[in-house]
Amino acid sequence: MTDPAMQQQLTIFFTRLARRVIEVAEVVAVGGGSIQPTYRATLADGTLLFVKAGTPDQMGRLRAESRGLETLGRVGALRVPEVLLLGGEGRHSYLVLEHLDLVPGAAGDFSRMGRALAQLHRAGAARFGFERDNFIGATPQQNSQTDLWPAFFRDQRLGPQLGQAAAGPAAGAWLDDALRIGDSIDGFFPGYQPQPALLHGDLWRGNAGFLKDGTPVIYDPAVYFGDREADLAMSEMFGGFAPEFAAAYREAWPLDPGYAVRRDLYNLYHMLNHVNLFGAGYVPQAHGLIKRLLSEIR
Image 1: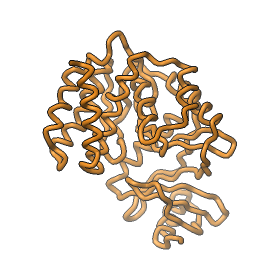
Image 2: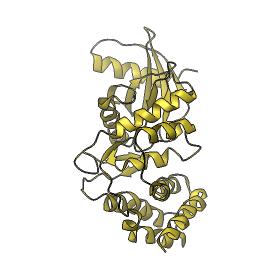
Image 3: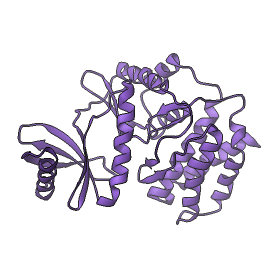
């Protein structure tokens, strides 16, 4: 069922930016927007658009997502939705993207995605971090640029999440164990010196899909330059991708043997973020990762 208020607001928004009347014929809320509401908008000429809406004070979040999509799109390794418009109207801010019809992938499609991700990761940079801070879900994500990856991950990934957890309702003795991980961060990188790779940053199965011809698509990024293993680690969370994905990636660019341990380190960041966003129900999983990591440094 169309949303009349949003339909009117988007018509005004599109018309103002285009300086000609662009009528929105239908606006339908779509699922998947756990952080911000999302809509499929149909223009009078039949054009379909994907719209992510927010309040005016969430424009920074939408701007950061737009910048991340544009950065990924320039590489051309994986298809990303094209950014069409970014701006505000009335009580709303909007990120308007091309609408892509996504379908479940076959085994060969996941292989294609794995090879394409390896190609994306070969787009490097001089330093770790990014040109601007952004967001992981609704959580601010720091990206100050540095030459030192372990310190970057400790200070700009684990540290802020642990600080937020300590100030929140999920605080508890389990955080004392978590602090020991940061103190021992260098111990997880024996003989391994990652180079800055362009990362999606939030690469789980809910942020990827396929076009009907099998073209892999990624979206909802939290882009920065970091250890490529961080993307691979997250791709194994929450059900993961089909096994052909990891096999194709490793064939294209083999992983260091230490990945098996660092996978838990990198996924601790995302699990802590779930604790902070969604509550103490994720503490047992976070603490399980922490205990496994501590067993590696004793």
